[in-house]
Image (cartoon, rainbow, N blue to C red; front, side, top):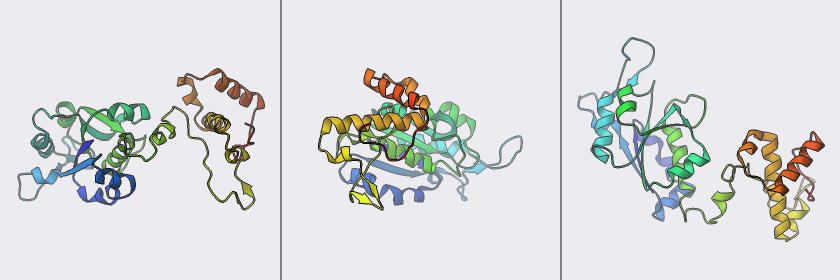
Length: 254
């Protein structure tokens, strides 16, 4: 999968892209990220990319000319792939959206900055606007990295375990179950016995139940969108009948 990133601050990206899974994905040829500095497409000697907004008001707005020139100069006119703008005004990024976007072999991302981009960029160049949450950041660089990271995990072959992405929180619609590793006991806190039993069917059921429990406790609204089995529903009914419950270490029988 290829990403073309258009930004005023390309130096932000390499430290993260050159680490961990993203670095390995690039080495293996699954991922390519090309960084394009929008300033390179300016035509004045000062490389101006932002101006005060018409009508007054605080802050600066990214000018349309260098953004259009950068995107069309790289991707053609019209662009050869979807062009995404990272902005707090966009659609909220969800796992379902990520699964859909991961089907593309190439995506372009414009990282907004300052007070945002000239509206003509939104209207005539951008394909889709995406937000990573209902809060405001200094710029779109971090959200761009979030989107790249999210989609890279969905590329077949990137994760060592092909089922890893499917079991992540939100991938199945549920929050992920608890994880434990060695030592078996730490400060008196023990790993649930079921996870040490070697009984894989029971372990799978325990993990499913813990995902249901954690989702009910923390993001109950997610459950309304799921097609739950009779066994799932029975477990949730037991939780409701029990009233309050300890969100910590659970009995291995659950």
